[in-house]
Amino acid sequence: MANKILLEVVTPDRVVASREVDIVVAPGYDGEFGVLPGHIPFLTSLRIGEMYYRDGSETNYFAISGGYVEVQSEKVTILAEAAEAARDIDVDRARRARERAEERLRKAKQEGLDFLQAEVELRRAIVRLKVAERRLSA
Ligand code: ATP
Image (tube, rainbow, N blue to C red; front, side):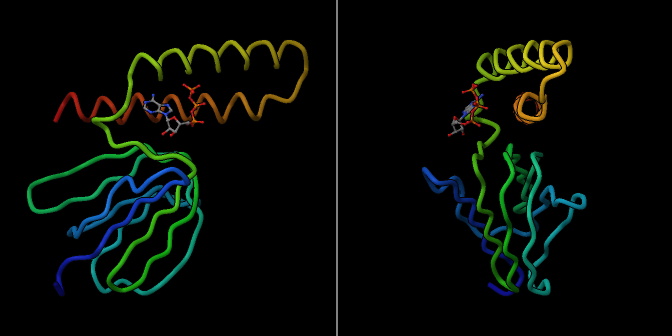
C-alpha cells in the first residue's frame, strides 16, 4: 500500500513487531525522528528511548534499548538490543532494575569507579517505566 510503511522491530531473540503503519517515530542518536512512507533511505544508530508508531487511530509505544534503524522508502527496520511493547513491560521488574542501578550509581560515584554501565542500566529502566505509563494512560 503506497501510503503505509512496513515496520519491523527485531531483537536477537524475537520479532517484536511487524506491520504496516502510517508513521514511525524513533529515538535516533541525534534526536527523535519521524518516518513517513516514501522517506529517503538512511541508516543510523538508536539510543535508549521510546519509539512509537501510528496506524489509523491506534498509537503503540515501545521501549528501545539502543540499536540501529534502516529506513527504506517502504520499510523501516529497527534492530534493537532489546525492545518491549508497552503492554509487555513488567513494571515491578523495571522498578527493581531502577533501584539496583541507582544504588550501583551511588556506590560507583562514591568509590570513584566507572559509572557508565550503571547509568545505561538506569536509563533503560526509566524508559521502560515511562513507556509502561503510556499503556496505563492509553
Ligand atoms: P533486568 O535487570 O530486570 O534483567 P535488564 O535491563 O538487565 O533488566 P536487558 O538485558 O535489557 O534487561 O533485557 C533482557 C531481556 O529481558 C530482554 O529480552 C528484554 O526485552 C527483557 N526485559 C528486561 N526488562 C524488562 C521488563 N521490565 N519488562 C519486560 N521485559 C523486560
